[in-house]
Image 1: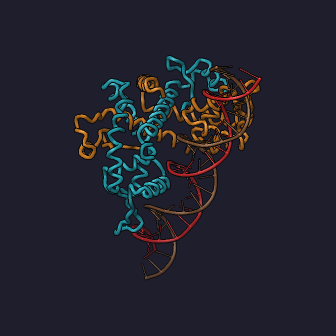
Image 2: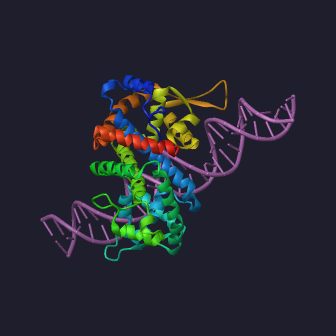
Length: 172
Length: 172
DNA sequence: TCTTAATCGTTAGCTATGAAACGATAATAC
DNA sequence: GTATTATCGTTTCATAGCTAACGATTAAGA
């Protein structure tokens, strides 16, 4: 999505700058337009790549971005508890609970209670779930490569590093 | 959310690299780990800032990121049709229809049919909606500045430019 | 003109999502 | 050892979000 509107050069329209300043009563030179661009562009790319992945790759097996991610986690780590999945994916435990219920219906994963602490539920991937992720992952990665190919190798490294700092500093 | 898991240096865990390569049957040197980092970090930051904004700023008036964005668009542009709002925000027309229905219930916006083409519905902001966005926007912008402050001014410009190229090349 | 095709917004039906409340279990306090 | 507190996952209930189907309207074709 796009909070702001940009012209062909990637700058905020002068008209919009003036309007924001006027309407919000923030003087134009107190508006941090670089911060605006960073936040807006990050959200826009994220929204775009989520839509593209779901449409072009994940829809083949009726998976959303998050359900794919959960399946990926289970594929790599074999067995993960609900709380950990929520943290890994930055969504609520309720969301994990619901999505894994759907994945369970499709027989892509199953639940098992930790015998040492019966409050904890572990999720694990089934053979069928494995088959699905092993079909989808190469296509997913190929799309990642395509999407990132707007940037050179060095630029990709730069972008990743800057974003990584935002993740760390903001504790995302 | 986080498709991949990273160590303290921001690299993918060696264990995970090996596992991906092994499970996906993609040779390690064919995996483009820079692309992986770029895509993952973008999504992670976007998810984090959306959650933070909704929790810290937008919840004061029960707005989601997208409903806030729609309200913003109407604030700046006075009157926008459904289809245009969908494009601006990279969501479906159905989503716009639903969210504006909620905004209408709260009396933050209202509908009017284009008399020249009766298929088109224009949305417009109410006085009450204006009051809400004028209260929230300065706080929203302040959070944008805080979130982006992990980066220097130059780095913000760099990040914005790289992301802008991804938006353009991928037509997001 | 009159039929066909295209476009617009809404609705229907589904999954996703979060906050809050809840029940079960474990850890802590005394 | 019992009472209190904390933690875990689920459920409930609301909104968000998608695709597909639909009804209304306009444009295009002959």
